Image 1 (tube, rainbow, N blue to C red):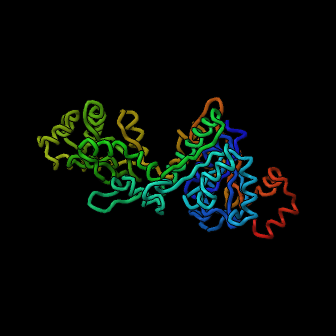
Image 2: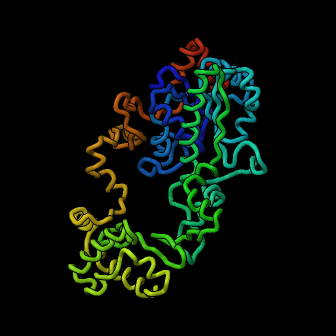
Image 3: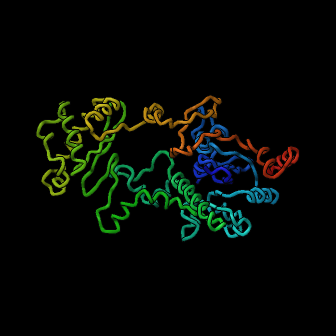
Length: 411
């Protein structure tokens, strides 16, 4: 789909997924790493829990379909080689305002390479009072408004176990690159794509921000649910072997599903007829107006939790499907690997394990295209795996010349 588009990827973990998405779409993405390797190679988890630059599962996940070359472009000879590479490239991906500045800034790059699209992923953007601020996953999530809705209501906010901010930003950077390449077809010129991690993650909280702007009651955090208008709405309930998510809501749409759930809970012997026959369509109004005490709603939730605790996730899910109740298992990684849905869609790609080379299941493409499917062309590259191939093909550098560059610590 994007065959013939060459992307030079200088990103660390801040934007690494952008290159992966472009590579999945067919672009020739070259990961340009320092001779010691990208910082992303040092991120856990590691194959066999054995740290090493060739064993990072983070790198293995987000560097597939890329080629790898090493280059120290901070020294003059290395920068000269980089300029030669950029001269025949379409896109440059970088992480951080400091990296873009070290390259001379966008204006200098655009004058030297007018058709080059430059995408830069930063915590807070390239301008504004916070443009020079450092940022980590947790500080970005905090500043975007996401963190305030995560965790228990009576405790400080929590972030998710796996970093998310840079993945949101990197995906947005890939989209920005595609837009810039499309516009280049008309103007013949590249442009700067600036992506702020704060903005990318803030997009996920737009409804809450809009609510605050019009004076509505803001959504508050409540572990396993939401806290709204003094009512703690619970969505996550325990099962014998984990947890399930239940859309325990009310109103003209959700009330029907909650009524079905309560019939099921009653049949299993966990609530009486009076509880089963409550007005689940108008229950929100009853709670807000005080006609139904909050303490009674809390009792109902405890009954539902006792009910779900008596069954496994699979048992609950199978019966929920039959009864058309909005319930889903909270999946573990093992559950995902065994998912019938993912298997039916051939979602997982088989790639060599960084531990022993044996095939392992790797999450596949972000989208399925009917006419031009995204392809699994190569596993994540070893450090400098394609030095000879890239330097020889693009720059005409011989094996002896490459060895000399390696000896001088340029590549």
